[in-house]
Image 1 (cartoon, helix red, strand yellow):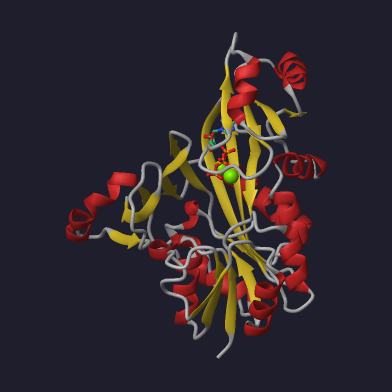
Image 2 (cartoon, helix red, strand yellow; image 1 turned 90 degrees about the horizontal axis):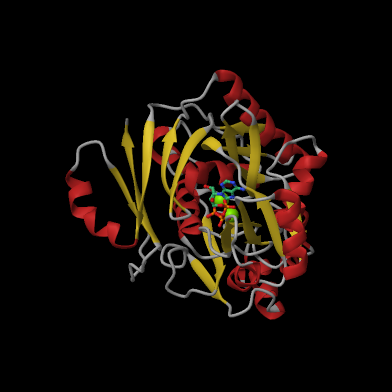
Length: 349
Ligand code: ATP
Ligand code: MG
Ligand code: MG
């Protein structure tokens, strides 16, 4: 059988490895977590302290047939190094855009796709200029590496800009005008190397404290809004040349305008409902797309609600197992720290 290489060892890699195994593939994970969620279920693991370790990358490349990833912040030089030895999907060019909020928004805008208004910010004086241009409320984010709302500071009238800059804590930032959205949606699209695409219907995402809390599938939005979200996701996947999955997070404004928030070229938390309630789950679809297999159908089998189990919420698991119709997924993480995604539950709605 063939071996899938996985860059990154978290829960997204774990669920991909489980789906790959169903299709007869072995998974070899390159990760810094020897006991992490993916290493626990993968056939093999290469443990690194640094993803640019060339000796480790060379061994990994020789041991796998195709490489994909579950984390978009893998250094692009590591991905380029691997790509000289083995197919890597998605590639370094896609990551270079998805790793940087300025490039991500610029890329969307160049295709005529709207985003929040934004300015690059390099220091406190630049932040003052950006606030003068965009006003408040607005949000200062680190350009790179943020997730689950980390590295973000909300600005209101009178916010101390020097303190906000220090709190953001990165060398380069982006100020975004605050979008007074009606709801947040996402579309995940799979794309093969030959350009064939398949997307699941748009879903609604509800956040709590900057972290995804619940996803409702499908989103309760007008068909024209759903079609626009689908069009945007496909246009971005096509223009980026993604092979694999592209998740596109979007805001729907009160007048029905769809704006891109951010993209992720990998399985996405808002696609976890597909494991139990779609014709094909996102993890299997990723394996299909990167291995050149036919894409599966993406229809909804029944309306669903995905609830993340964050931190102590995971303690509910025995009750969830006892609940008829609830489908529990746990990630094998030892410590339930606050804000940590420990598992999720899919339910009909
Ligand atoms: P993720 O965990 O999805 O990668 P992240 O840390 O990259 O999150 P964002 O997706 O940029 O952060 O922001 C997190 C959430 O904060 C958004 O889903 C949205 O609810 C809110 N948010 C971020 N930027 C804006 C904005 N410009 N206007 C309104 N809400 C925003
Ligand atoms: Mg993000
Ligand atoms: Mg986000």
